Length: 98
Image (cartoon, rainbow, N blue to C red; front, side):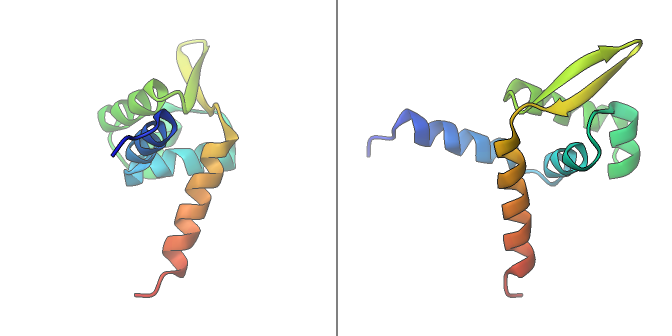
């Protein structure tokens, strides 16, 4: 089977989003706007090193970006299409039969 570049990129996007913490990051950034690491750590109840790893994955995939604000980096969503994908996936999961 020949896989088009678009299908390959779509699969990679879904792979990046295939983690509950990363989905939580996207949801928090959508709901609250720019946030720094310690705000995401507090709202998602994960360790700072773990959060930094997830933020790196999301940045590498160009789904979020960081902006320096003094000593902190504030993160925001780059592409609103991602929020639609995440919202739809969560809604689908909530509506799925047990």
